Image 1 (cartoon, rainbow, N blue to C red):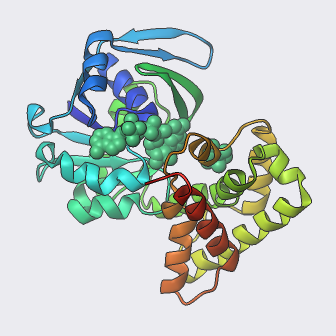
Image 2 (cartoon, helix red, strand yellow; image 1 turned 90 degrees about the horizontal axis):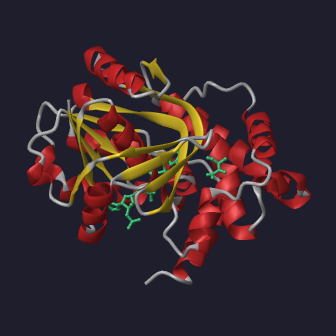
Length: 304
Ligand SMILES: NC(=O)C1=CN([C@@H]2O[C@H](COP(=O)(O)OP(=O)(O)OC[C@H]3O[C@@H](n4cnc5c(N)ncnc54)[C@H](OP(=O)(O)O)[C@@H]3O)[C@@H](O)[C@H]2O)C=CC1
Ligand SMILES: CC(C)(CO)C(=O)C(=O)O
C-alpha cells in the first residue's frame, strides 16, 4: 500500500517505521528539510518497551507531490497543527484516499470530515505511546491498542489488516466518537493541572486541592457529553482518572512536558474543546474554562 504519514514525530515515526518494515511504501512527511535529510540518510531506530532496538531505512519528504496520490494518509501532527498540515500536504490526498487520525483531542475526526467524505474518514484513539529521544530515535513507552471506526467497513478492515500485520493491536468500532470522548475524559483533568502545577500524575491525585479540581473538571465534561448526545463507554470516569494517575505515578503529563519545553500545547483541543462545545450546548463549565485560560496565558508567556 502507498502510505503517507503526516507528521514524522513520535507516533508518526513509530507507525510509519513499522508499516515500512511490514513492506508498504511509506513516506514520512515533515516540513523541515534538514530533518527529512537526516531521516533519509540515517533511518529510524525504534526501541521497544523491552529495550530491543530495530533499525529501519525510511523515506521521508517535505513535498507531498513526490508521493502521488496515497492509498492511506495517517495524520500524526499535534492537534493544533492538523489543519495547516493537511492543507500543506494536500497533493497526496485524492478522492479515493483513506484518511486515519488517532490524535488526541476532541476534534480530529471532524477535521478529516472537513476535507474528505465519510467513506474515507477514519478516526479514534491510540494507547500506543512513544517519545522522540533524538532525531530518528524513537522509544516506545506503551503498547496499548488503537481503537478506531468510521462509516465504511471495507476501509476499516483494510486499515485494520495492515496495522495488525505491522504489530499494532487494533479494535474496530462503528462510531469512534464515544471512544474519543472516553480517552479525553481521562486526560482533561490531568493535562492542564499538571501543566499549571508541575506535579506528577500521582502527586496530582494525592494532593487534595488538585484532586477536588480534577473531580469538578470530569463532572463538567460528563455533563457536556450528556447534553451533546455522547454516551461515554465508561462506568466511572473519575475512577479511571484515579487508576491512570496511580499507574503512571511518576509520569509528568505530556502537557507539562510541552510547557517545560516552551512548546504550544494541545489545550485548545482538550479542555478548550469542552468549553466550546459547552457554549454550543448552553452549559457552564467554569473550571474547564479557567484551566483552559490559565494554560493559554502560560503559553503566551513564552510563545511569539
Ligand atoms: N506520543 C505519544 O505517546 C502519543 C501521542 N498521541 C497524540 O498523537 C498526536 C501526535 O503526537 P506526537 O507524535 O507525540 O507528536 P510529535 O510532536 O512528536 O510529532 C508531530 C510532528 O509533526 C511535525 N509537524 C508539525 N507541523 C507539520 C507539518 N505541517 N507537516 C509535517 N509535519 C509537521 C512536528 O514538527 P515540530 O515538532 O517541529 O512541530 C513533529 O515532528 C498528538 O495529537 C498526540 O496528542 C496520542 C497518544 C500517545
Ligand atoms: C493524560 C495522560 C495520562 C495521557 O493522556 C498523560 O499523562 C499524558 O498526556 O502524558
